[in-house]
View: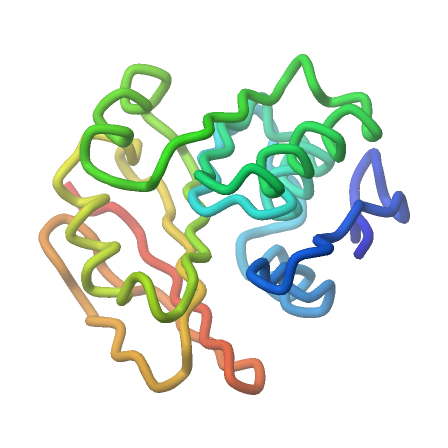
Length: 184
């Protein structure tokens, strides 16, 4: 795994040793950022189920100001911290060792609102609809903010749920990436 573009372009990231983590592939991450835009100057980013932190760290490399990474796994937390330090981004990163649930998101909302939220849950643990319900019930996403959800291609991602509307959707093998925007 490596950072695809920006100030840390080409730098490698440490990957998981445990089989439970499924990092976003470089080509999928590159495609996500092609859709979001190459430069994310000054944005606040939230990475749910952060894993290695690759999505948030890519955003920071492309100009995002700060990132909060949330993951309950000990190895994921260690990887997020190590990767941020290796890229000299630890002063712009907060790693929260908590499960992605309503109490955690309520706490994290105080650091927001976020311009960009990434969510790559274990496919068996969270449906796209359940994740959208969790996020839409908070004040995490800034007006016109974007939510990027990775999910199994067989899992249905609704076109709209509460204050979130799907703007795009792309398939990469068994992985589907759905892009949502907050609507007022």
